[in-house]
Length: 196
Ligand SMILES: O=C(CO)[C@@H](O)[C@H](O)[C@H](O)[C@H](O)COP(=O)(O)O
Ligand SMILES: [Zn+2]
Image: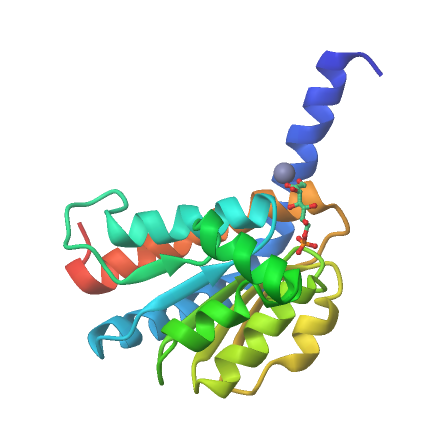
């Protein structure tokens, strides 16, 4: 396959997955956006986490909350747990890498806050520990997962929300995760600011 054909293949794979995901995920994305807005109305905050590309997604979401998305609005309370290298390296060094998000959640999380936990496999140990910590702190959990949902899917309580992208490709799942994050941002703004 030449390189141009490969690009064509990658674009088509991404488009096809998004098209398949739309009817399944749209109602779940709406529920997650409503949960987030309810939290913001009650002065709750969102803590987000993930590894690798999903760490980038966690930060992408928090920056669009703290600053703004496409429309002018006040900042909304969100913290990515992936950004403070001093905190992350010290927790990993003193305890275990598994604890890098959980320890921050025990320190920052409060009743009714929301954890946005992102993992394409659903099996990252530090994200799993983050969900346990969030439950202990009486937080709600929104998970972005892929594949078969992994161990994360089994941990969720009935009030939590899993948005699972049904694919085995980490890269394709991440591409849909980013679209889901932008949907959440758009729906949050629409609920807070009204339709344009
Ligand atoms: O971005 C990519 C692959 O596209 C990688 O950095 C990927 O995020 C890393 O391998 C992660 O450690 C995968 O973790 P997870 O999605 O299974 O939780
Ligand atoms: Zn990637």
